[in-house]
Image 1 (cartoon, protein in one colour):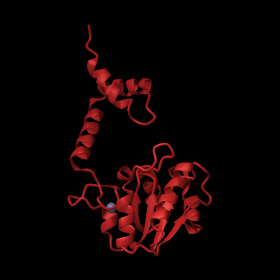
Image 2 (cartoon, rainbow, N blue to C red):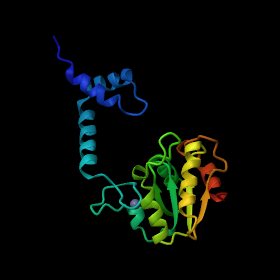
Image 3 (tube, rainbow, N blue to C red):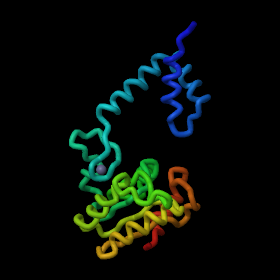
Image 4 (cartoon, protein in one colour):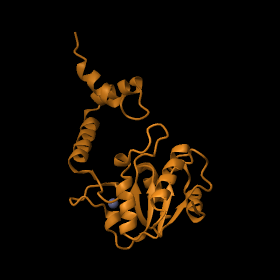
Length: 199
Ligand SMILES: [Zn+2]
């Protein structure tokens, strides 16, 4: 009898990836068994990622820099008085590749939940608020989805900064409700940035 435990283990790991069900995971696992060169490349990339990639200690985007601070945060040509607060890494990548923005970032990695409330540790909100105040940020641009969660997050940030002299804006215009901005085309994103409004 063939021992398929190893396939089960790979399927079990792959099916935890977003959007991958058990059937697709099985297809991937069997494909990898048949394509060992590709499997090895994937293994080496994952190993490198595990050993070297971390989240930037200032903005939480990924970096391989030894000091844990990413190239964007270190780049003195960027306007450090503007901070773009994004919901997730995908939105961050969409904005960066559109070249519409030249300030710095903060990646929340989630939103305030109406059911579970504020997980300020997970979202790093305390650090974010502290950073905005101590670094005299003049504008905070919020890029959060037009959902209840997005509104709650906006409210929390606005409330926490009510005594600070910082302009808080949002780029909702032109982006349909509930749309992840990684699916929005570049021109719409540029337009949305240009026509951002105070919240
Ligand atoms: Zn950074």
